[in-house]
Image 1 (cartoon, rainbow, N blue to C red):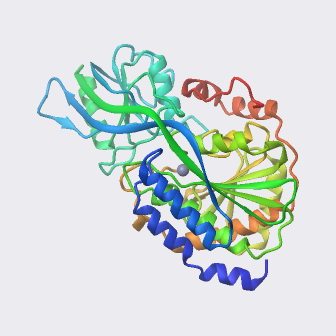
Image 2 (image 1 turned 180 degrees about the vertical axis):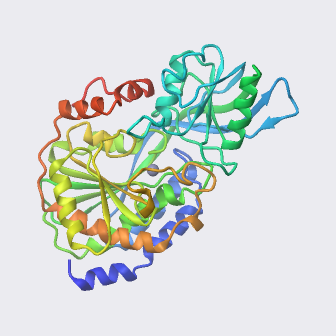
Image 3 (image 1 turned 135 degrees about the vertical axis):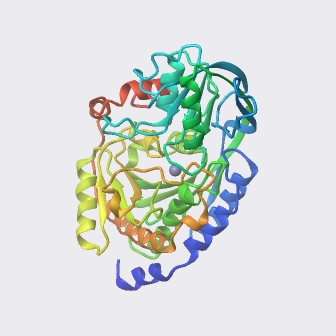
Length: 437
Ligand SMILES: [Zn+2]
């Protein structure tokens, strides 16, 4: 890419304007605000000179009602709790049990009780342990309900879906770090809690926004970013920054010669189970995809972080770009199933996820403000969106010129097993029965 193109991308304020508009919309899965956001993304792609269209798909729409959490020994002491998407409606009373980090060992005593589980990754784990795994372990151990307690101070209850695309059997709510500390204190005293959740799950519809860039070749690279967000905040970081980064990259690439077609997709319903990406994987010919580039987390923190999900060839490509740019590009390799690359990766498509980290984090993944009501526009920084859009454009151009072979599902399975991911993925209901479809 020549300096004129890079310079124009550096000056381009359309991605930030898009992010600002998206942050003002409630983009929760299957709801009218998500549909409006899809229209705004479509407009952004059309302004970039692409022919964009909206593809609807059916899904299970979850709608939040009220939530109540009280301790029976101290009924005047009630706590704020946020129901996790796909929690069923419930009225549960049970003994409070401190279930630590929500490992199977931590959940040994939760049967018949209400488990308090920390959002923190267990100190001895060498990978991020996902919420769905913790809640799955607690439910498998017989908890009547799960209270998911933030490990970060600041009175911010965390949210996050309980299952991929379907109502869970066991109700669950998020509470702040401070509430979690109170509940653990009450658990030590053998207290009972009452938890009420009102919510509905019904048939709904969401949509992906699709467009094409570059020459009309048989093979393609898929560039994807989710534009939906949780209903408790603005989703400015997760994943408003990512969509803005992707659109910035598309705008930079629109006038550039590419070696193969780039399928561009802004997908819905990531936050409730990668439903837009899964619908997309049903409609595109995954055998013809050279790679998927998933922009989830880029533009959020200062330094770009590229996760290659076990593909040696993709890692070399990223290293090649990183050597030529003045900004740092951190590289991660461990595959995980919790973002939009997954429906493609498990079908054998090499996957690159563009995330970001704070320079001090040393590549350690941190949730930050995301999945709380503090995920708001003021936390985003136009400098990060701008530089990551340029870096993403350079990476996509290079990926479109490469070939990366196929991911062997048996090898992917082996990598996940080796990382200790299988029991948790099974508890979360995301360990595939079949890996090739
Ligand atoms: Zn996300």
